[in-house]
Image (cartoon, rainbow, N blue to C red; front, side, top):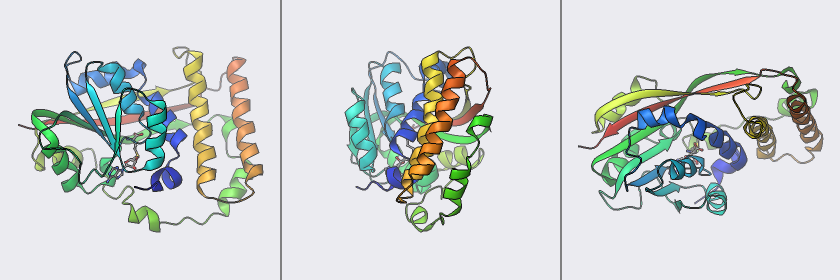
Length: 283
Ligand SMILES: C[S@@+](CC[C@H](N)C(=O)[O-])C[C@H]1O[C@@H](n2cnc3c(N)ncnc32)[C@H](O)[C@@H]1O
């Protein structure tokens, strides 16, 4: 166990809030069609590389009769998930050596995890723990759209801060971050090559535009807070002392964005994410 990912790659709140939005009930219809699972079934679902647990939290609401187990090797994410998400069995462990018996799950699912794990081991372990007829769902982020509000452009303090940080790629390599990313054609081919049948693909397009009237205020404000957490946790992750000035600059620009939202002064900043979903079965 370690907390490399939550300390260095994506902070707990960054990941939790971004996924809480992405897997909001408003978007369930899109996932439902591609997941093609029986909502009333008493199934056992395993989420691989669950991070802080937002996908499992949504699965628990969407499939109320299912028993959901979620596994990750990052202790920071798991402590958050256990404290904040009831109804899911969070376990620590390695996706390449799953601590579960053969043929013990009806569904395995992962979101933005296949990119970081050697594919033969990634598929082999899921195939092993699935029951015959079981479904493997692999979700993978694709290129989306992003447009920033003028008040959220990088401040002078942020530019100064990031200019002085030398990026280190050593640990990213050690943990295989992004090492196994596959194209839209390679991912389903890899699933098929590793034994799965009836492989199908689909895409969920999640539009996060705080000013869009279709979103309730609480959700719109969560979109803004998610961006704030992303910036704050990125600063915290580089462990530089005396970052007070840059933290204050970041907080003040998001406070301004919230003020504009609350006063109805629209900015139309947007973030549209595209998630590829690959579905296969174990014969
Ligand atoms: C990009 S994050 C995605 C987290 C989560 N699925 C989500 O969407 O919020 C990748 C996750 O995979 C986990 N991970 C990477 N390699 C792993 C492995 N071999 N075994 C278990 N977890 C792993 C990391 O700790 C991290 O939580």
